[in-house]
Length: 204
Image (tube, rainbow, N blue to C red; front, side, top):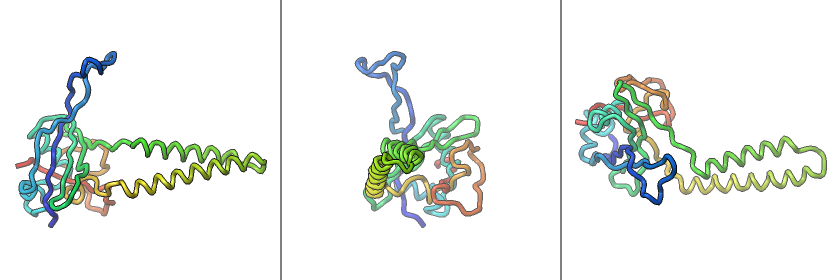
């Protein structure tokens, strides 16, 4: 069985901006205050992956638990593993009152966007290469961009937290980022680590 985890549940709301921060048409900003916490001993009771008797199995069950306890809305949940330092993004989803929920896909970071722009530029420059002398300058520029990409990839391998998402505590309904019903049954065929998430039932 898996080790217990602690989960901090935050729900999206809108709060007034400070007067000096108000822009035309934008008088409020998004905020995610904490609305609940699942403690280590509680996770042992509610996650089936931890105790084999808990009711939470899929991300749909977990979403239903949030809906029943805190209402419809957008949630971000962070998790801590007992005995380990640090936390990770456990799940980010939107709960609807009509029996559906949707996982929210992580947005690209600034570095990821910059890397994508570099790749696009490398492809553009490669299309301009010919036998002319000016091609040498283009090749040097491509080389510089490639080195930058490799360096950023190295930094990312150091800084990136490899733990992300609800797996193996929950199973994900497929496709992950489409709308699903809370009580859907997950596919049984093998899935990749990123495709696996979690199920849940109401947090009891």
